[in-house]
Structure formats: structure tokens, C-alpha cells
Image (cartoon, rainbow over all chains, first blue to last red):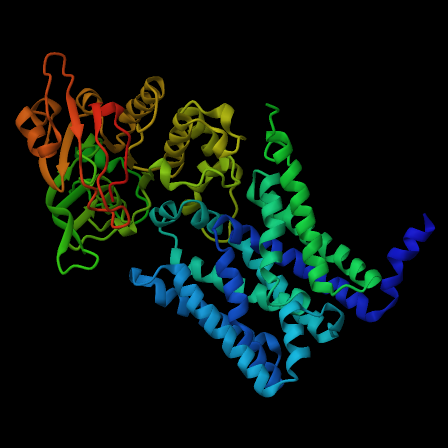
Length: 282
Length: 303
């Protein structure tokens, strides 16, 4: 028994691991809570695309020595509006617009990195995250930005719920529907920026979608879905870091694999909804 | 009339006491056809008034513009030209308009309970940065009991039958303190007892003078249960008491080629619907033929 505690406690003796654990837990929570809306509104592809689109912003900030969040946020919001503009008035379908912007912006980011950066190492960090490299100032900005996202989600809980469940009701209640829709996109961009250091651009979508999807199968109320998703997200983050620490697996993928495993278990066994419960012998 | 109007509690923007509850003046809704240089009309030159507390059935074939009309009055859609007025001003400022959407427009897997759905109707009153108070919850539970759904309060919305879901959405409009209730094909797909339950609720709204517009395919019910019937096929064919509006000539005009026989003896009307759904650009082609009475016709999107 004491051995297990020793194993669990050991990583905490290193400052970099403490920062990694705190950042990962926070990212797990904020991604999963906002992920509830990503899942319910069918924005998984959009979220993935937005994550890839911000690469040029991250690279630019990296090269100029600015905080990564600044460049990422600016480009993320730009990409969100560009997608909106291309698909408005029915000229192009939204997923087509997303595909165009996503691939173009991502290519620009990789091109910039190949021109300015130490290509392979940096690209790997941006793509798959590097939670063990979280500095104290990174940790501070992670907590501030995550806190901002969670606060806005809390303050506009009923409004976001209505625009997601029944936008026509939102209109007849004369809520500013477009404002809330864009606010949600901005929150999504902020959340992705916060997550990049932990899970990376390529895997952010897993943290947005997977815990929330598992929670969707387990709950029947939105706030519970958010709470359960947050717990799964944070738990996957911690478990993934332990696995990474002891088995020398890259941290970002380890976290995502734990979350995926949790989802598979839930998908099979969720009360009433899981595959096992629905199985009827012939 | 004027005393009834003065009893109104004013919400949203001011209600002009001299104005009709709903007034449309030469309203046109049009949009450019995809790939062509012609214009498609969803509604043409619509002019009518609806007075306080009237209960009105909106009837017409698929693609007649029934949903479009509902969305215009709710302020969800703006007319291409003409004016829509609710209590003397544009609908966009009013929060007294309860809109019950077609069931196909709602994601019933959404993690939300029945009482939370009804509480959504109160959000306009509660306002930003505030949470529902005990008073709001008691209004929600009153509204649920008015539609006989108190025992469903804590169920997830998708666990309910179609009829129960319709009643919950009506309760939501009541919680909104709606003075105008717009129901878009609430009877579609419901069995007779569920339809009866909805009509009982609507009858219960009469003393409160709630103005009701209900889109339906069911001519029998329209003739039976409503003060006036609006016969619509892009333009207004007739708008009068059921006995005046639902003449064979008017019905032939509204349903044009889609109708083949009227069996007048017991008011039962047999129709065949083979109507192009021109409103819906995504859904090119023909809505398939359905034989039988209109009450058995599956609903389709009509814009």
C-alpha cells in the first residue's frame, strides 16, 4: 500500500511535474466544460480546425518572443470570423469553408516554422504539447485564461443553453443570439490556446470532445454533463501524466489515450445507453 | 374590446391599445432561387388583421408558407417588403410571443429536463446575470400543471412522447407569459387523444385572451375548433369563419391540383397531396403522394 502512495507521490517532488499536473488538470477541466457545448452544438470539426488554424499566430509570437497566447488568440479569432464570412449567405457550406481556412492557415504556420524555427523540435511541441515544459508564468496565464472561460460559461449558463437547445426561442426572447454565438467562438479560441502547451494543436479536439462525449452518455442535465466531463478531463490529465512519467510516453498522447479509454468504457457500459445495456441476445 | 386591451399587462415594448394584435400589410417574402435569375415567393401580398384573443387555424398544402408566416409574426424572419405589426409595432421588440417550433427542429437528446425547458421561457423576464428565483420555479410548475405534465417535470425531454413534448413546449410559452401563441404543426404525428389534450389546453387559454395561431393539415379540426380559418397557399385564399372559409371553391383554389375529391356529407374531405416543395432548396424533387385524409398526412418542412 505504502508503495502505491510512494509511486503516486514521487512525481510531486519535482517542480516541473507539479506545474505539469496543475496545468493539465486545469486544461482538462476547461476543455471538457466548454467541450459540452462543442459536443451538443456539433462543433467538433470546427474546434479541430480552429486549433490547427492558430499555428501561424503561435509561430509568429514564438519568433517575436511574445506570449504565445497573444498571437494564437488573434489568429484564432481571425480564423473564426473568416470561416463565418466564407459560409455566410449560403455561398459555401460551412464544413467546406472550415476545410479551406484550416488547411491554408495550418500550412502557413508550418511554412513559417520551417523558415524561422528549430523545425522538428518546435513543431512536435506545438502539435503534441509539452506539459513538462510549463513555466511558472505559463501556469499563471493558464489559470487566468481558464478562469475567464469558466466564469463566462457560468455567467451565461442559461443563455448559452438556450441558443444551443432552441435558437428560435432565443430569438423570440430577444436575446442577442449572434453576440452569444461569437462569444462562444472566442471562448473556444481561448480554450484551445490554453490547451496547446499541454496536449498540442493536433490533440486539442480530443480534450474538447472525448470527455464531454462520455459525460453526454452518463448524464441528463447540462450542468451535470459539464461537471462529469470536467472530472473525466482532469482525471485523464493526471492519469496520463503518471503514465508518461513512469513509462516514458509523450505526455499529450498519454492524456488523450486515457480519456479515450474512459470514453470506450462509458460507451460500452453507460446505464441505459451503453452497448452492453442495449444488447439483446437473439 | 378596449377594456380587454387595457387589462393587458405591458411587457417588452408598449402595446398600442388601438392596434390589432397582429396586422400584416402587403407582406412579401421572397428569395433568389439557387443558380437561376428568378425569384421564389414564399408569401405574396399578404394582408390581414387578427384581433385580441382570437384562435386561428392556418391551413394549406406543404410549401404554402405556413411556417414562414409563423416565423414572420414571431419576428424570427423579416419580410422582403410590407409590414408586420404586433400590438402596433414590429414583432422584434416583443417578448410576449410564444413560438412552439415543429418537433423536427429540436434536438431531443439535449441533456435538459422538462422543468428546465419550461424555465427557458422565463429567461427573458429573469434577465442577464440572474438565476431563476423561487417565484420563477413556482410559475414553471404552475404552467406544467396547466398542461397536465407535473409528473414529467424531472424527466429528460427526450424521454417524453410526442404529445407530451408538445404540451411541455406549450407550457414553456405559458411560462414566457405569452399573449400570442404560435404553434407550427403541433398535431403532426400525434394520436387522437394527444391531439385532444392539446385542444383542451388551448380552450383553457380562452379566458386569458391569449391569441392563438395554429398551423395544421387537419381541415376537420380547423373547422371544428377555431374562430377563424386562414386558408393559405403563398397568398391568402380565404380568412373567415370556418363555414365561410372552407368552401369547396376555396379549397380547390388553395390546394389547386393536389386535391381530387371532396366528400361533403360528414365534412370528411379526401385529398391527394403531390406538392412540390419549392421552398426548400436542399430538398429538390417531389414530396411523395399520400392518399387519405389530411389528418393522416405526414408533415414536411414548409419553409
